[in-house]
Length: 109
Image (cartoon, rainbow, N blue to C red; front, side, top):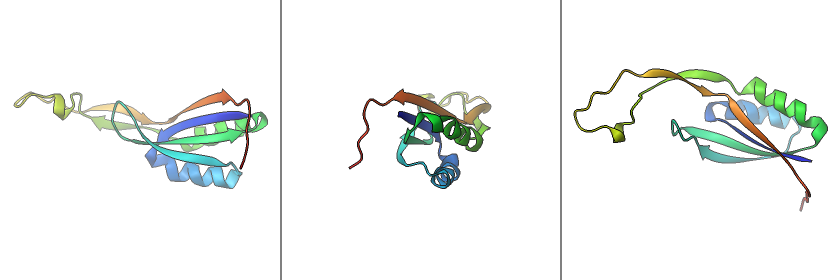
């Protein structure tokens, strides 16, 4: 048994949730926030048998899209009054991260 901790952008949440239900995975969703852009993320906790792991990885790979977003280089709260604010730059956002951990024991109540 493995525990998959999967973090994706909120824009991908509905599509991934629908696909997880269709595929028969049981999961818990936790709302989270990214550090760099301070945008909403969704964290999934999924208990998965090792043979089903490639299917789960493929599901997330297919349904969590990376995209570009325009952001200001300097956050407004860091700028002094009258400071020059540079033009926004494109940064990649979205996609996902999956951590896989061994589970010693699993009990359902």
